[in-house]
Image (cartoon, rainbow over the protein chains, first blue to last red):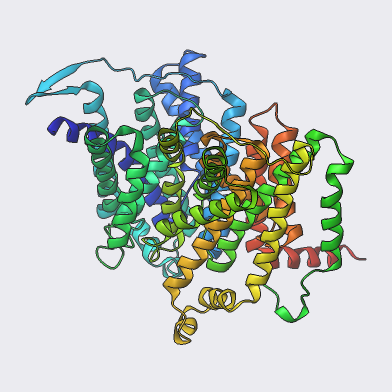
Length: 287
Length: 317
């Protein structure tokens, strides 16, 4: 039981990273970015190509992938910005369009091949209190906690965070106070893109890398973000961990064949009780 | 925005021409083209279901692949195991998908906007599991085959085509009549002026529920017709990306519920992948670009036309 919950937390941490990226984007620019999974998937393929074909070092490849995904995020942010100002729903459709384009570009550059991409870490295993913990698990949870803490500190304790919160709560008023809205949006999209790349690199070792694996995994992050409420960063983390643990428990006690059906019931049940997610703006709006 | 009713007759001249052209297709073209045309018709029905939801509820669904799958599997199973004859199996398919639509819509009747979109996304992801449930209950492996009705000795391709055409024309006519019905007006008032609708005694939740259920029913009908056309039903035909493609078609067709609008959107999403069958990369790029440009044009129509007018004034000597 504890082991199940632990592995649920590991998966949940990955969902939480994805959901956190989505919420960062949503809070700043009111766009539910359906291209997010494709952005992350493209970055993972870039790392793969650099490491595997061009024999770059891991650090250099990841740094280049960061640069590339920031560039892509910048383009998407500027492309969707004018639409998002007019209508939330049209921005959703536009981001789906951008996701399709990125999907096509990924296939065009890297083909539909299925490859594997492992992290440069050992296969260590520890026994703690009667259940197994791998190095991979520790890395995932450690990275997730570090990133979540960093984002929390950034938003709550720095001037940058004040600006972000200002734009998020009252865009028009912050524009009048001399804040460049587009710059804040770009910052949020860049941050989210980095989260996406890190999330993708951590996801891929558990399965394999194809043009659809990362986007498909990220679709669950949307569900996690919805459960937590798109307005809340705390909600994103909680939603991710909730989805991770519940799906893992269901896989063990229920039947793993019907995980997605189970997830639909969970989502509909939670959203019926909390129509705006756990942390709807009326309750705990801030972080 | 829908035009006022007064100027519309039930059938106008362009529609008659398109109808006649559609009727003539099997006589004019070879089997492959007739097959593609039949696919265009079924996709047009599916696009109408998405446009219907966009127009009457203002909601985006990316989970309609499930309702299509329900319709398609219903037709396949009903024909194979229960020998249900032709029009009745399609009606049943519509009923089943409406029922599933109701099951999904009832708990999400308070949701709107992005929360509903994500809920439909989760719903759409269950298609492979739905297919495996069907296969477990009725036996069978991945794909279920669909037998065609023997109609007056007509060749199979014509039966496939005319089932699709009949479904399409009936759906277009029904949606057109719905626009003038009390329920249709209620949905539009509820969408545009929620408070006013409530003060007239129209329940907003009921409106959401009915719009979603009707849309699911239309998608189920599209799935049923799809089963007739392709003659084999498998969950691969109803992925998340298929649902997104339907949204592309609906947006390209300017969310139109009409004969020509839905056909235009459907032509785009059906024919392009056939042309670029060799390349998996081009259709998504073209679809995505078209989707983005349509939305951009839709939200910034006034700015674009204003700028074009200014440009013309400046260019004129």
